[in-house]
Image 1 (cartoon, helix red, strand yellow):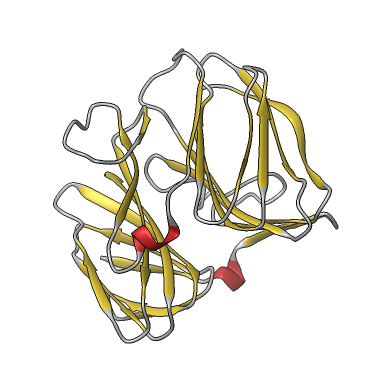
Image 2 (cartoon, one colour; image 1 turned 180 degrees about the vertical axis):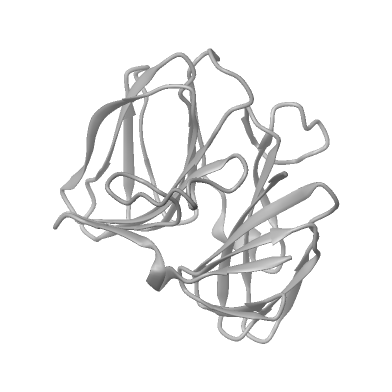
Length: 234
């Protein structure tokens, strides 16, 4: 089963310095029928103006992934980490028992990134931070493993989080196709970050998404299509 998510009908948060598309209920956008998709609790597509950002604030018992699309994302936290990431690079934070962090755009251009929250499989984990400088070209024509569950020993994904999920990124060149399997007892949330594509017969444009349940799909790109997918247990 495939369900289309139109980005024009998503929640929005527009604050001058920040322009967000909310895939799920977040902040002042609340719909009781749109809280989450499985373990995926937050998928925000954020545009952050230069010299602004999210000041230090607390999190606990949440697995947080930030996927940089354009610009520079500078992370700082109460564990002493401070790193700046650029296009195609990824940071993650297991908030566990509690951590404070901030995310800012200290670059000269507008920052766009996906902010992803995944509910962990338990509480009270030790807080942890990491980042990976993936080469952008490594996702062209294939699904690049980004993150997986700590118990998934068969995955090549370097990021390990406390939940039964698999996160992949891909760039499908215009006129080309790539398949993605979603087996029995599994589901996936697929986001078209940039470009245009047909997924399982559904036409998508930039910022659209599809929920996929127990169905193998094919992505057919009509323009270069930059994709992210979170595959998980139902």
